[in-house]
Image (cartoon, rainbow, N blue to C red; front, side):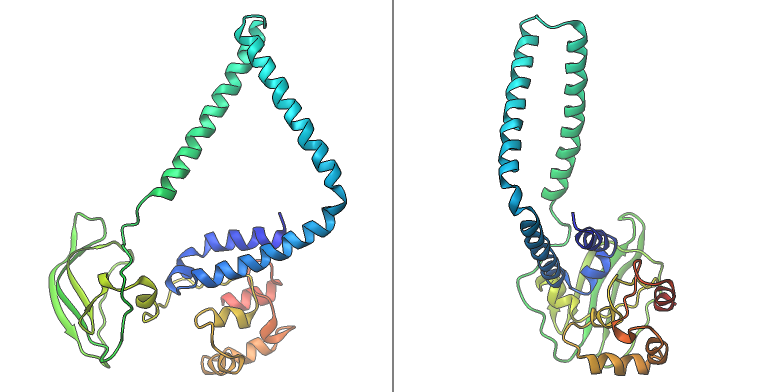
Length: 261
């Protein structure tokens, strides 16, 4: 597999929370599709002269399967030695262990999510947020808050301090502009939420792409203005390729260290 594809998949699993929080699942799939398309096209150009060899290999594989079937039939009829039976039993054990792993993986794919996606788009107007008899716990047993009711008018600021962690709201209703957040789509809800993570996660991409990850439609000029506002512009301009300098695990040590700092 191409290293770009391997690196992208590894990075997607590593930063899955950031991808979900910023609602970037579809854009990441498009990036992966582009990488996969280039990989397959390169593989076709490289291997198009080996189709004959591939067909011969398929023929040999089928002959091997036929030979294995004959061996099993011979073993069942009692013509094989005890050593062959032991070898066959060992193979059977390995296959069963792998089938158990595959079964667990299938169960994960078919597991129903605890958060059900609503059908309506969240429409923001006054930006009012209300909690109505909300109860919440980190471990589904010990309540961190119980029957909490309050309203935050649009334009005001309220700080709620608590431990790190997450879980589902056990009771009550949370509304934004009189819209129950359980009735709206996750994508429209996440588009209205800004999160400042405790740990900065940097993708193995350019400085420009990392900043634009928060808002894909942001222009290069807007990114530069934001970086100036937070005091990063001068440091970025010292990088070899400035805003096009790669950061992340595969980036040069100085650029990666500065990005995380």
